[in-house]
Length: 381
Length: 135
Image (cartoon, rainbow over the protein chains, first blue to last red):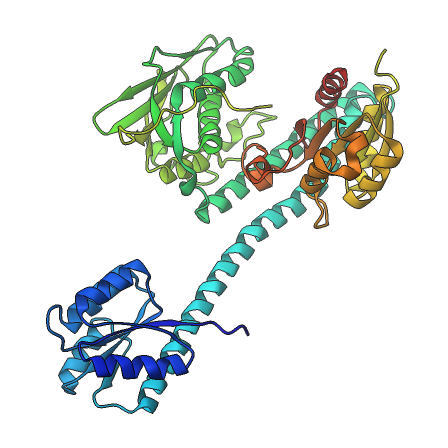
């Protein structure tokens, strides 16, 4: 194993004590430094935190116990060892209570100092090892999700690709009946792929791989893009899909990819569960602390008793009414909720059977001193 | 038809995918050559000088589609083919989330000219290929 050089800072008002400690520890291979009082010591720790700090408990000015507490605040990874001049059990216990790793009663021999600091090094290495293992475990878990989903998807994708070729007539003539059956089979395969994708999204979000990517973004751009993309779905039932007039500059802190997923899902539902010639209206409003996007449809509505369960995994209001060829996984709303949760927001549902349903996506208002988000749409397919 | 004889190289480690995509491209009268991994692809690109490359991303090797694409666009070895359009064809949704976005540019990697999700829709594939060949 590679030898690491550890640093130690000795804080003691007695010059001879400081020098002796530094000399012994330097011989042990430590980078040593010292300070004559608590204030100077804390300044040095602030400037460059050492691995270990030896603190004399009884010093003029800032006392050792106070220094000990401040050290813990500056960097909890520093290992503090206290030197107790008046070797009472009480003072040692008090120091340990306040986070000292160990204590050294004066007078002590060089060997005692070496023993204690070696124990500290062992401790330090254990902590570091645990941290490395924790990081590796996380990495393996994340890759595991990716690998499993790749292994699951690959065969399905290959099958689906053959279906595309046959249905496209590129492998010879097929009868209308064969074509019909293969079209249905293809839809089931697509449903299966969607399920794997959705399951993966949930696994990712449970791993917390989202929240650190939030950046300022313009809601109007995002919504207008989604409306454009989803417009073709409205044609079958002649649904009117509109964005109500807005200020044009509503900014939230968001992750673009996942927010697109949320709005795409909710708007698709609003179109799918609408009545013929119905309407889907998207509007933005705000109050003192929130920005709220309402997606309102004119569909059959959702009975009150179902609303509390809407966001549960695989919850379906009436499984038998599920339309043939519906490729939804039953996880869409669960994912939407998880995404909005990780934006620090919430989704609320109000519905009147026979009148329609409104999904409200509530974002916390971003701080007012944000830089302006880019207004041009990003690269898309 | 001006593109009638364009040569397209498919680099993918899944033999079924190569078998399935070949008739799609042939139906549009393209000539198809295949390679089953990036290393083989690297050699064949220089040998065959295709007009366009369809490249899988996740292959069973450290030298993946991202690296090969970057090499084609920037490496001296590929000087003669550096302007060949590259389309990523991959079930990459699992790498980047809901929709594929090439993130390598932030790390100085050269990206593809287009990308398309697996399974590919024949019409979609053909129209994207045609668009790039016309440039």
